Image (cartoon, rainbow, N blue to C red; front, side):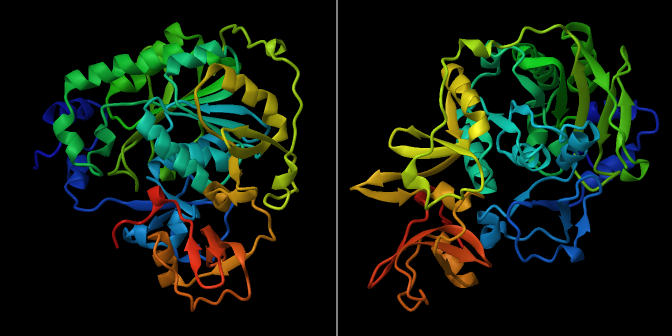
Length: 454
């Protein structure tokens, strides 16, 4: 029997009735875990998913027979899919089972980086919802913003704030996801480096931090609103015991999420209040370790007073009309020299959030005026709002990779008589901007996004 898993954790898990310790340890000795992707339905592309096995609790999730080099796939860079562990995709089932997709909501993903669950919520919540994706750590907030730009939907605001900042927005959000920082035991198979960092002391510290994050941020959830709490830990201190604490101190009641027994998910109940929870074990299903539980807020909650806002009027900059689709009602605004667009319905909320939080990104950045000419932003190439008649420069696989390296495209590329700005595309999906000049093609792919190794 291998000693990969810390003995203290094995002993604790072995105390669960019916827990198969041998199978649990054996699966962690396997050299390769399970790879899965989640398709972006907002960016249809010619990929044959009929040959792939679907993740049973997520209709856009698929298992891969082997893990490819995603860096070498232009569709990955175009935001056509997101690489995500299958267990985390259970959030899609939870959203639908709790009817969170039936009407427009204000949703908050509190600890959102790197963006897997935020992009999932962007897909599964009602299309007219507003998603606030927050990440407290500045560097990780940049990654979060980049991944949401790739996903391409405009109804998102990325914030970079401590969870306590949301207490200044009492009763503001309808739905809140807290995928809390944890001891990471559920990632042992995926990231062996986390094993050496694990200890019972770390578990206790994480449990205390999780409670502090929840207590600081839960005032922003309105009465009757839904909380989903998740970790990638196996420890009761971070899971079921936090569920009991929520019921005892935070004015919430537990909600059951219906599951199919064939999925292999282990239902649990907390010791004091019988709160339903759902554990994912890699020896019972094709995914990594995960825990999730749902709650509804019952405590009477003050609500943010929108009357404090001065009346505003949504506007649309005329210089953007040839760059973004006119099929949606949009409002435009500027940050520095850059012009952005956001669904018009959320213009008042944008002003609310700007007045209280630090915003890293909002809506879709379209471009800026430079030397009396409009320079489009890369974000627009990733967006579902881009004008359908924008010129396109199709590239084959090799030229697409050269473009993504920010390399030089040869003059021999068939530009079909185009000139000026054009979208570099692969299989019909935009990758970024080019500018076609009489004797060369300028590559405007962002330096910070370029492929640095092949």
